[in-house]
Image (cartoon, rainbow, N blue to C red; front, side):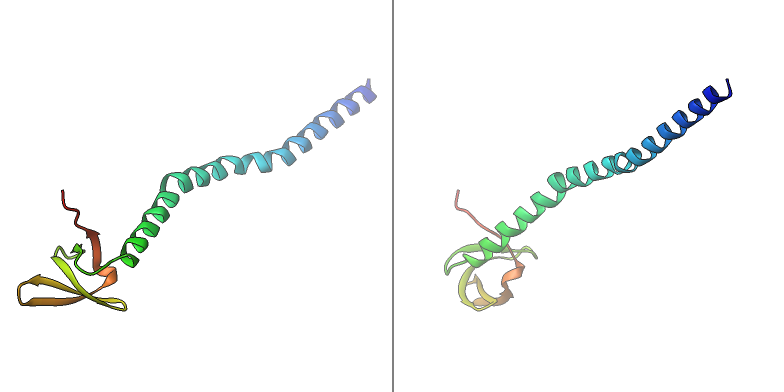
Length: 108
């Protein structure tokens, strides 16, 4: 009878050790899944949007109508490196950086 109690105690200790070892990885699984979901819902679309914005700014050409992030609408008069000269009115030209250009105006 005493030996059967010892075997029972050893069996429960072995099961506890197995669950403790497997429980460590399983405990991190929900956190890993959360990071994957956040990546596909937030980070990846934002990176794509940023790449598209950089491509749009690199492809700017003379005589395109643009809107700055400050809300100024103008036509590109010239481009000098990172500086864009916008023609706002007949005799009014302003200089803005390329990073200030928010969108191109499409004629619809």
